[in-house]
Image 1: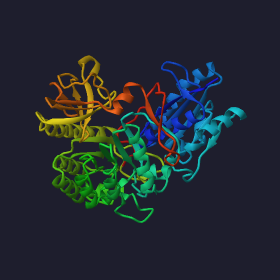
Image 2 (image 1 turned 90 degrees about the vertical axis):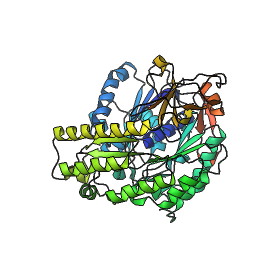
Image 3 (image 1 turned 135 degrees about the vertical axis):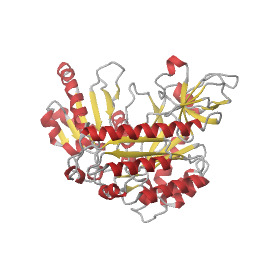
Image 4 (image 1 turned 180 degrees about the vertical axis):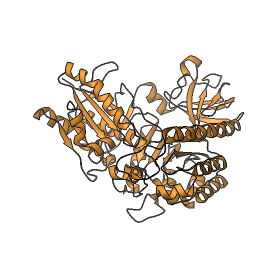
Length: 494
């Protein structure tokens, strides 16, 4: 009998992409996605360890599954990702009904470990200390018909004191440019319109093969891929950000004028304590150069509030940088103490109420700035790649949602003489902004244009690309998954 699976994903974009690889392997091994509302034979948790509540979230979910497994003796539960790499055998000790625990370096082992656990009737825990197989050589079942993640590196060589990622993901490993472009071309050949180049620190790409300008060159190479309409990337590090990348963004037509640049703090004293090897003046100078080359660029960031020892003066410096930076959006986090990081042992851990009050002030300021920046777009024309499930109120408002080239979320009315049949996710539309809010735009007028795409055809048919690894040929299409993965914002893309 065919066995079914379900993957539940927590954390950053890297985890979401890893889950696509896990799904591809399971389907290669004969598993099929579980139907909505059904009980899967295999449940895989792909975990994150960045936030303080990551442990509680995992063990809470495992607790809820305990009775389901008792009622379905053949069910298997697997736990992978960053928290699995960190906690290892602790997971089986706290939740002995778990069958498989695997780490960030051996996601390719999942089908074998499931079979071994079933055969031996005991839990299998396999955690490797270094990368066994580069994830992009593994099969993947893609979540989107129109947009794809393409990993250019894994791991991180930075030593930020608040971050546990380097100890869990390892040192940076870079893919060769030809391998990256082969995967991009394979996705585009199946109708994908947009790719996001993914790495813990994308602008240090090339360090492993000795080319400090490799990332800018890679962006320019993506410009030569016929049919690729949008290129994004996440996340760069301010200390390694160079002018050749800005030039590549400005001069390559399909590279979107969108930049996610993590600030973390506007206080130079706190940045030093974080081991962030830049200062606020350098950060702001990068934004100035980006905007000089691309005046329409939308810049977002990550900010941590309440780092150990942060004073009110330090926090005010962060607010001042936010005022000067004019971010279009920010992922804001209250400092989360993570065992195993240097910051967890630092003096000056702040009371929750102090952190919360500062956090609220930061969010209020950033919302005010984002709203003001969005209002500048009223009456402007925007090109949107129509998306799936981005608007929680779309059904009741009869709108659809899409992403502008600068990454802003726009809710629009799919009506007007320009509409060619039905507007589908994956299609391209143009419309005019009629309303601005801090976190989105609205376009309620008739569409100015509507272009049906192959990605839209595939989305309408429920088809998703399924890649076999770049060395094994072009993607093929498989049946759609019943349940989409969930992802957090920001996460470990630091």
